[in-house]
Amino acid sequence: MGEKAHCIGDIDQAHIPCGGQGVVMRGAKTVTIAGVGVRLAIRGRNSAHAAETGSAKPLCGFHEGFPNVSDVSKTVFAEGRGICRSGDTISLASKFLPCTVALPSIVNTFVFVGG
Image (cartoon, rainbow, N blue to C red; front, side, top):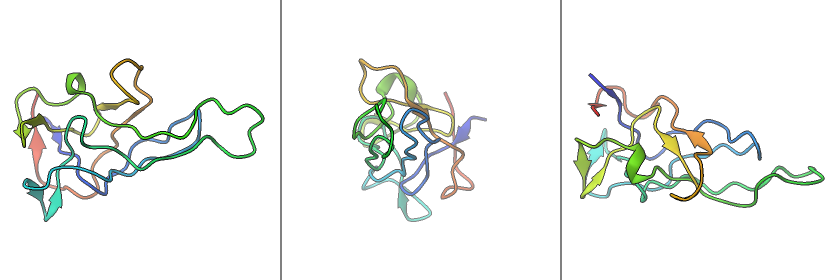
């Protein structure tokens, strides 16, 4: 059946190196679920979070994460981009390893997206 589509307002798993937890801040403007934009590859950025304060040597700097084209649905699209699903990885950019993962959707309770 697939995983639930991720939407603006959903959260990503805490990014362990810096302790920051991203909230989806951007997504589709024309495709919504329960009135909220669905999260898309590249465009579906999470809230910026900084390296943990008080750490003598922070492991990561101020950044935002987003789902890469390679990590989202290859069969379901919105505005020409693949839709992010719960469990998809989130990265700083295509050249970096994933830094977190999309947690189960709290906004969307009924729309599932396949492969």
